Length: 119
Image 1: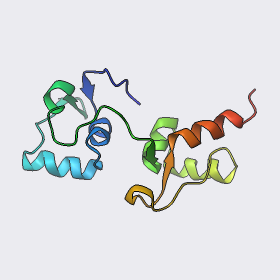
Image 2: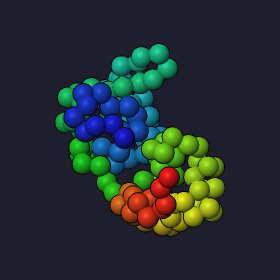
Image 3: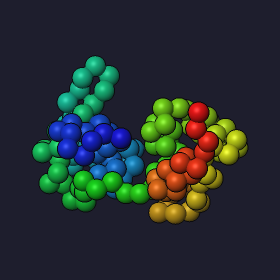
């Protein structure tokens, strides 16, 4: 996850700050509700100072993450996340929390990872 003081926000960071999913972010951007992003190569970024006035914007990241976001945080694919769960390396997801089909508490994941043997 990007540092909360970073002046640039990628689509995942901005969606998390607004409390919406990336597809809703894309729809709002296309309708002109959200300012146009800066495009660098194939990636899009928003300047924090240009979007922090938007309704619902919060710099504090919630404790819950979805499967794709957890996979991105760990640097693996979503399929690999479920292999890690099956192997006992990650906790099972919570279902139906905050209107997500499956999500994880970051605190729960971190505490589970701290209990694993190191080496």
